[in-house]
Image (cartoon, rainbow over all chains, first blue to last red):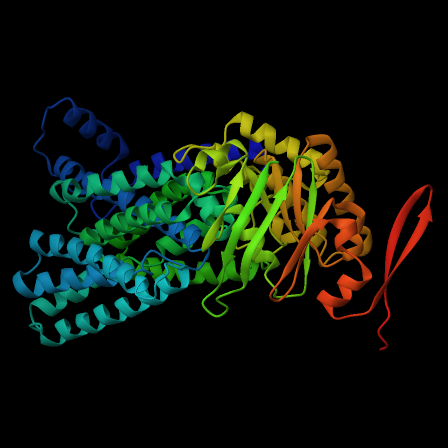
Length: 337
Length: 261
């Protein structure tokens, strides 16, 4: 792996520049093309408080900017949550939905849509059920009297299965002309209802979670060695692990809440980052944030501009992520035990 | 006396009375070995001593202070634990893994400082693995990995080093190198050591005291008095002869198994 100090600095620089670059590409790219120069004018005018009433201005400021900001937050959030989960569960194949977060949140959203259509109520319900599902997973794993990784993962599978069944039930009873398409569309993931109000709703929890995970990033190294070794190095792993799980879950649930289920990001991005900056979570977590954000911006540009109708982004991340993961699997030469 | 175990009891759900009334003391710059058959509880003793497992009854005292009641005691005189070499979940580099030995000195929200990295590098030099420090731990041989684990324990600046069968799975040259290294660390760093071993001749060669662990009893005392032909026969159910070999003024003991094959 690349670990030379000089190379590492270069890689960080490239990653940051790509993020900034893609952010601006996302503002002027799309079905409604706006020249880069005009985007700059619109942004500076808006920031100075002078609101222009042009279509371009409204597209950039009210549609693309909140959407791109949400891309950044959700991409970074899902990727860092994935990297953290992989570290503390000592398994590079774990993804943010192992503990049932995604299926719990998805059930909450589907239930909300069933009751009252697509609105804030469904969003809040998604967040509540996302967190509730992890809480249930954790309580279930405690039933065996120990909080081992294996019992947590198994409990997560059980809770996920229950919520998946409930989602099917909701789809079965939902109005096939009105609510069923809405639910199905939501389950495939999309940034189409990005807005400043949504950004406000989940921006703070996602940011708090990301910052918390970044602060704890070196401790994840110790937890990844297993409980016995953590104890032997003078660290009590139980409480730290709980805090990390709580934060990663909070981030994932918040992301799923506004965008629906977007798979593969939390699994694939940390692996790309391992190849770039190495295994140390001190570098891996920040790198995952940046690359996750870049990835999400790019995929969302494709989702909204490839065809006249928007493609659900969950489909694209899976179509890009799965082959890429297959490639990684082939080239990694068994570095993972 | 730096470490003392007082009336330690421990058991697992399946084997409730694995360890009963374990008492021993470890002095400064002393090496203690623990001998016994497979599955008799050697590793469990080490885990209880280092605080990985909790004694069901009894306690470990560090410098006279109970380890459970004050974590301070453990931080003032840290115990470095060297597990048996085992595969890792993630391919960390040697340097990254050794730096993790600093964990107890690094705050929850911090990352290793320059000083931590320097101490880790010193530990790497001390065990002589500088040439492999940027390699991935998953690509190392068993002997190299064992040295990495020792370096990691040293990075925590321990006063007591606890090693679980450090020479197992190694060829006899590497076994000897590890033993030499341990002797040097005790001499130069003033460490005290507790070592699990399967080799009575290693125990005779390097340790001051020995704990011989049996099914329902154990013996603790000076190594020369504990490891005798009679005792080995009693605790290992095998007939042996200890043959002293005189070489350059030093008496080295060889073990010969007498049982017919």
